[in-house]
Amino acid sequence: MYNDGKNTGKVEDIIEINGLVINKKEHKCLLYNKEIELTPLEFEILLYLAMNKGKVIRSEELFESVWKEKYFDSNNTIMVHIRRIREKLKEDSKNPKFIKTVWGVGYKIEKQ
Image 1 (cartoon, rainbow, N blue to C red):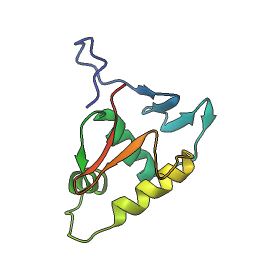
Image 2 (image 1 turned 180 degrees about the vertical axis):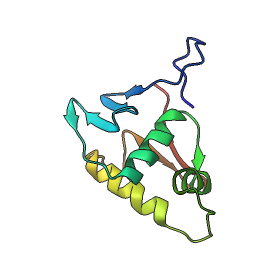
Image 3 (image 1 turned 90 degrees about the vertical axis):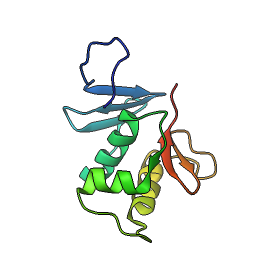
């Protein structure tokens, strides 16, 4: 879980990353103060990555955490959802600002 670094032990309801604001309580995502329409699964994927920013998340872990099902090899579900999220965030696929691909491992959101 994401912690604000103040050792309060409280999980933040709002995560901000370079103009991207994820409101966990309201299930909303804003990019530069404009709401981004995400499906519930896209929101959960983005939230999971944001709550673990700086950490590389394996596709298997992401799938099992969001779908609550066992991951099977050759499952490209995560890749497809990440691509859709990037499109909605208007990310350059060759140089994404938010969701980075760590080839052969998984995905991460950089710590700021």
